[in-house]
Length: 272
Image (cartoon, rainbow, N blue to C red):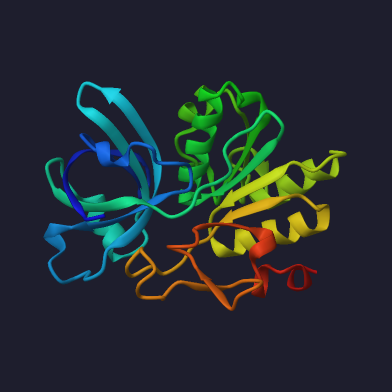
């Protein structure tokens, strides 16, 4: 698998610092599954930043007039993402993917509760789209949180999937006041049989989801954040402690891993 140079088709501003990068003619991304990612680098970066960055795919649309279209959700937080915030249509970006593991396929035999924080929305929105495609939107609830209402994006697109949407903001400007994991915990306490939890977001949120999953005995899959330099398991920079072997690697063995596989801070003993 090699990097493919793809001109940026559009950059859609969603809110303060949040935007979608839109690409066309990306047939190499056909078959992408929710949770998979690409490594991305702009030619204009030169040697700074030197390394590519990993981004989860938000949506891959097939069969359009300009071939397969792909969206990447970005929040401007570091040097690379701030440079992307100012990228113009036509800018040449190099993409490698799709890479990594995915969330379990939606199933009529399973109820999925998705827990998204920040740009962690991207793969879970794709999972909701897949559930809609399979006629299983009624089996999916998306819990989505941010610091304020301005951090919650793509709400119309999420609603169009038909999945139930539960919003939470830390300042109470949209949805329930508090963290999204507070809303998750309240909902779980009112349910007899635990659903399957699928989560993507910042590490503190994932640790809270792990604790809640252990306490409720809910099956759980986490999409882990990790500092990836290569994206293909060569540099070994994104090691995470796991059961049965010392480490797995977020890029090659993940980013989606079952909670049962994880050790260290995600283990049941640490979550108590």
